[in-house]
Structures are given as structure tokens and as C-alpha cells.
Image (tube, rainbow, N blue to C red; front, side, top):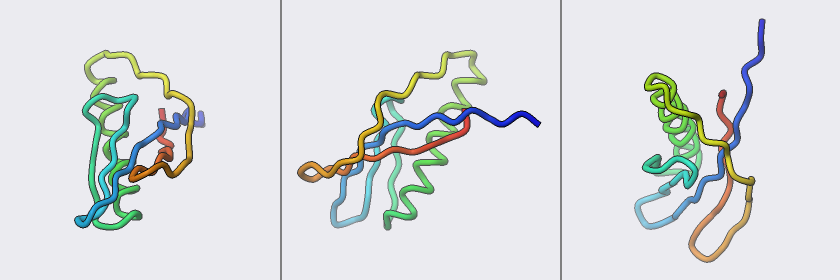
Length: 85
């Protein structure tokens, strides 16, 4: 059985009174939200997988992830999400 390649995309997380919001800068328009950090991370994993699946179905190229960053800067959290390629 062949192991699927993994891709790791950086995400930008904003925290406010309603919870967490994530954007994936390498995948324009790919974003999601969650009431807790754990829910957000599950949602972003699903959003990125769905986004990449749509690109595949339409014969579009899969964007190469930019460098991984894990930092806290101002009101943003920068981390990454890993998905099957």
C-alpha cells in the first residue's frame, strides 16, 4: 500500500469574542471558524482537504505550501495544518 504524501500549509488564526477564525494564505478563499481552538483545527483540516479535493476534481494544480511558521504576533496566531496530498 502506498503512503500518501503530506502537505503542511501555514494558517493565520484570529481570536475574538465569538471564537476562532482561520485563513489559509496559500489557498485563496480557504477559511473557517470554530468556537474553540480544537474545533477550529478540525474545521481547518476539513476545509483544506475539501479545497484541495476541489482543485484535483477540476484539474487545477495543488499550490506548494509556503514555509511553516508557528508564532504569536499581536492579535494573530500563525501555525500550520497537515493534510494528505
